[in-house]
Image 1 (cartoon, rainbow, N blue to C red):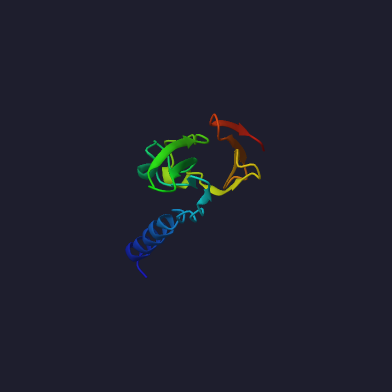
Image 2 (cartoon, rainbow, N blue to C red):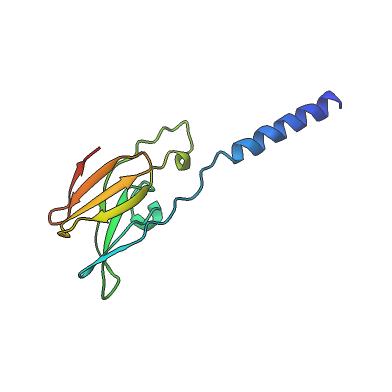
Length: 126
């Protein structure tokens, strides 16, 4: 194989391997229905109206499906030297406590947050 073709082959391998570096789409988080509310996790920034994908919950009215309120649970710091999609941190699960007044939110990094639904106060648990 000539040097020219060898170089083209190597460049092709590098390009194809870097295109596979993009992450997979996050798994959907099932909505929680409780009383008059549906707690959802819109993953993408165009869905949640923020500057980041991930870390956002939205509460809908069960009768109309209209948004009542939304809340950014955590902020993701983006390094400009890397593609933003590989830096996104998505919510993986939500859980409503027994009394229905707190929502537990877990993300891909294993961080857990608690949201007091009455006042939308967010606490980092671990």
